[in-house]
Length: 154
Image (cartoon, rainbow, N blue to C red):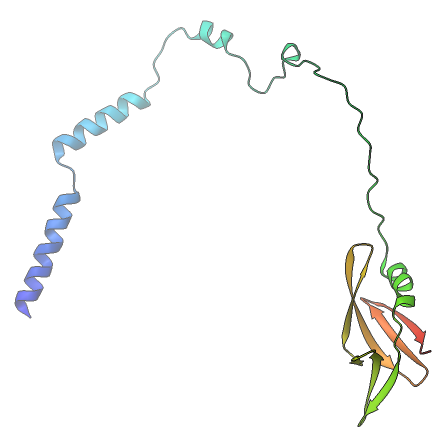
């Protein structure tokens, strides 16, 4: 155990001395840093006058290559939740209802959805998550965010 401790200590000491720069080299490095950090006096006004501001737009550098006309595409219309729900509601057409035990289901062909389940519907390129909030014998209620709508079952 003592031999292992001595080996570890001597190994750590060897690594520490290998990473410490010699006094002579440190002195040269610090002298070079001081020289680079000192501001040298001189007449730089002529050189500064010739320099161009990189943020200044030079109109002489800009030339019209060709004139083109661009068709402006209007931004897509923004709808609120009520408008979207009213627009997509006619497309939510269940084929009927079914009751299994105490749970009512809306039937969409082979697919059946119960109260609380969600249906994804795409309208004008956007997907909306419609929740079925209640199912009655003759109608059902759907919700988009905070807007609800009652639809008949045909």
